[in-house]
Length: 397
Image 1 (cartoon, rainbow, N blue to C red):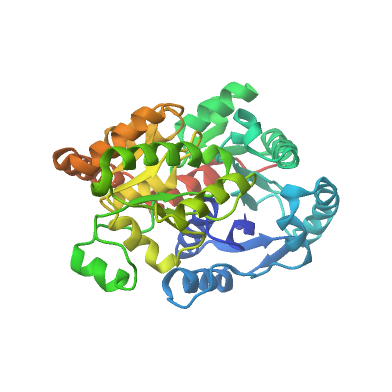
Image 2 (cartoon, rainbow, N blue to C red):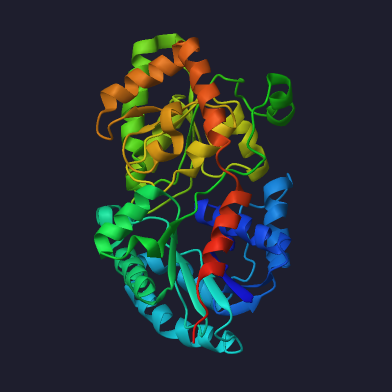
């Protein structure tokens, strides 16, 4: 069996989907699978792109992005979200380019898409649908992205032999929405990288000495600036906590890049930063993120919808409490380790911020439960479950 994996999620900043693709590709290589990546219509050897990513993750002077394999079609796709004509052009061109690249494969081979898009392929097809946010909350995405993503999801559901998703929450949504046999949908939960782990203050200081933060003396938010991440609600709740707490208030650190429909929230964040209310990093060095998480008093993760919620798992594995929304996949991932509030209830969010700031007993309980919960997940488990799905699909006639 030869395996082809969609590699586009590896060509930019390593978000959740990029982490998923990166770790599975590494695990497949360790299992000596005959593997190629399909990146914007080109088949490439995975070793080069993995080396590029590892440089960004572990080297202090690495840049925040990579243009590896980002050729003309890659740049075309990079602006899809804002231009429906570009979407049309890309959608027309890319199937022919991909079909040509994959022409030497046959019915005994497998294509695994980590990003819901399936190219023309003569063998077995497995697709990961990580979430249904474009269906559940279309108002949180550009209209062009909604139509593009939903069209590809529906095509993939029709043509894939097997569907993978990353939580039982999303599986239920897929089965209910598309009325398909639940046996066609397998759940392979994500994991946090092993670099995310608890750190004592002396170890933390060695990495974070150049920062103005204090160990255990800041709240942290990790999310792209886009509507479903609910940063406006977070700021409302935090400002109320700050007003209630006075000089004892713990500062807030935001880490997140620009997303769709983010002009208003970015302007508000910039103003609050100028006033000394918070600290904002549009990009934070990848190699320092584990320390940043390990040294936070808590991760504040108020997103309205997540297919999994990887930052929450990374925080728990780092020994950092999580404050997040009820519903979505976060309750499944965090169990009894997190503190929950209803999405629109900023008053309760304010109370939880104050509680986790001041109640050491509850803080320690969240840390213990979170590190125990995080032990359930690993990339080896995810890769094993994924390979089981792939290998159990009957060969096509």
